[in-house]
Image 1 (tube, rainbow, N blue to C red):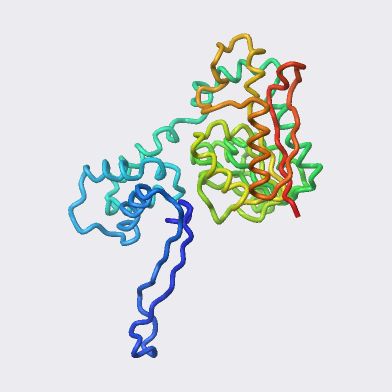
Image 2: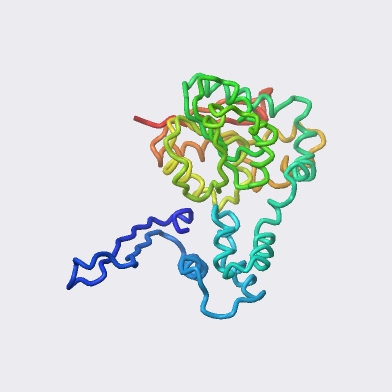
Length: 331
């Protein structure tokens, strides 16, 4: 419950009676949580998760408890990988209340991602269709991965699985993991990849995980390479530091590939109004200098080298439409 929020958790079992150690262990533990967070965030975490751990609330639970859960869980509960279990326990396993709470928490996730892609990404698709930029991105990423010799690859923010399909076609890649915060997106990835038709060997090769990119997840370790394709621009800037720690400190692959739009190139898109981003869900878009400054800073803080490549047709004045950073772990 606490580790995905960045806490280090230690639990020490207590004996039943110190004077009579032969009586053995008690059912209780001394639990220590360690993290650096705002006091307000700590109190919100405790307010929600203590009754969750206790699996009981010692008073009547009604509809008003949903509002309390959503209020105190604002900013972290929606992206928590155990959000359904948390809501269920907090609301004393009253399924009607749990369904209402989860529906409000994941309202956007419950929308068919294919429809979201149409409604939110139509402008970006139309803008980039002429130059097939998405295909060029994926091809550029695969070129780097093949050259790296990576055998275990994790795609963070895998969406509907377009890169996963290309990874599965490479027999040299032994283990592939796709990660996305949207459960529905992962279900669509399964359908499009036809996972139900996989052999046992193929099933063991592919793993799909629902998880947030701004919370530590113990399942995301021991990878040769990580890919983050057109993802960071969808994060709020104040959450970028959390993502940096997840990728470069906790996942810490040997190689990491990050791509993001080059805002300088936007003037080349005739149908894009001045000052507008390519996608309505983008929180920011960076110039080449901004992206390289960020990447150099991350590389220095976490012990990586970094190089840059252009993706798409390059203009002498404004560069290429997509910019790529390749991080290599320093030995």
